[in-house]
Amino acid sequence: MLKHQRDPDALPLWTYFQSVITWVSGKFPNYRKEMKGIDWGFLYNAHKDKTLDPAVLEKEISRLMQDDDVTNKKGVYAFVLDGKEKHLNIRAFSDNMKRESYERQKGICPVCNKHFAIQEMEGDHMKPWHLGGKTTHENCQMLCKECNRRKSGK
Ligand SMILES: [Zn+2]
Picture 1: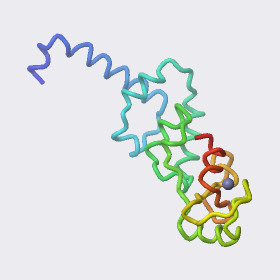
Picture 2: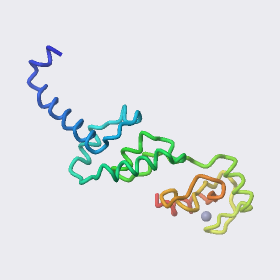
Picture 3: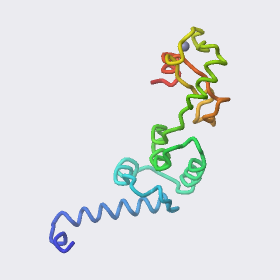
Picture 4: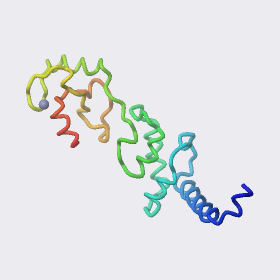
């Protein structure tokens, strides 16, 4: 630490570090242990110029923390800033759920109406997660890989 005080680079770094801390504590005043280990510098650089209402953020964070299908709770912070679902690692359908749907559909993809082997199909949220659809067997259908790709826009 003493050595760093004579380092001419230490002051700008310290100022930057303080800006990050000020931004995080201003936008996310409700501390949660999931905030540890997040790359806040990265999030600060990407979103520092946005108008963000801490009350709106907190409401969304609290809702996602209670959503059992959100398996990566740390990712909630990046998600409320950029809206990308990949941060949340939304729960995938279990093999049992997929098998049940496959049997119910008799192996037919409901989009292209062709028959497939189960390993040629993928579980799909009939009602997408972002519209409130859960990872439950009622909300699971099997689509062939091509139809699933087309539906999810990948
Ligand atoms: Zn299909």
